[in-house]
Image 1 (cartoon, one colour):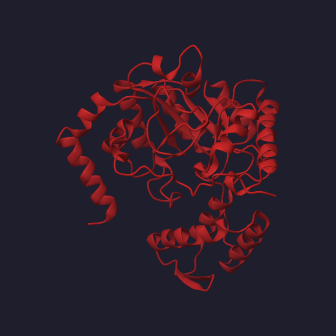
Image 2: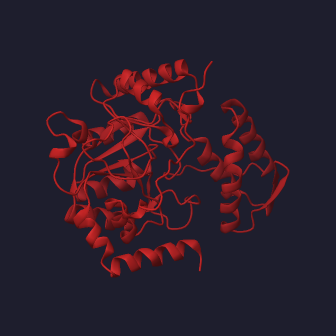
Length: 342
């Protein structure tokens, strides 16, 4: 049995035995869900299993609207409604990265169920409308070749599953490169794969600022996913201070003055970053550390529950109560106690 099927069977068993229902009764704290995008495609454009299929997203939202109390992220840190005063089973919905499918697919469903949400956008991508990891995925997917040699290894591209495995192996290789070297490597990879045409795709392209404004005008909250989509723990204190301040100022310049939250790229954060986020003027910051948030929660280290393509309703329900993470409380990115020194 494949790991995905095994996990699905486990959560179905938990649901049938009533374990999830019991945990829902006992659950305390506010859950924050972390989506990335919502896709109309069940197969293509989602090789990393990042985006949730629109039918499943609708099922999630129907459950949240009928069994939970969806609240804006901003309500969690409001002096008038601290966590302890929020309604039972409160849950906040967030979407990272700012993919165009948030506007074209997610927004109509959020409006249908009247569920508030916060969209975190990468503020430094004025010209480049696609992140490097999506460009990597796109050139691999579009490649007509059966093989690729990279980093002393040979990868098969003969099937969708093989391409997915190649992306998983190549991603950490590219992640280790400095931004400028990564751009050169991506160009070289594209040339090696025959320069296949990479077409516009709402599951990979990022929102324009006009589209971000449209989301804001529709009632969604907009936050920062930093100035560039890189782990902030890999930069010096001064670099991070400048980048966070610049990101906050960009939001104000594009959208006007207001309260803005921060989502740490890759969930990489520490105490110093939390202090810098506060200093830069953000009202809270969210991580990808799993779990729910109680009255004692650090507003600049809020926990979130990642939701991906394979998270059916039983998994979502287990996540919302914290049951899914009882046996593993780990961070999603290697943490540093301090930022890199210059």
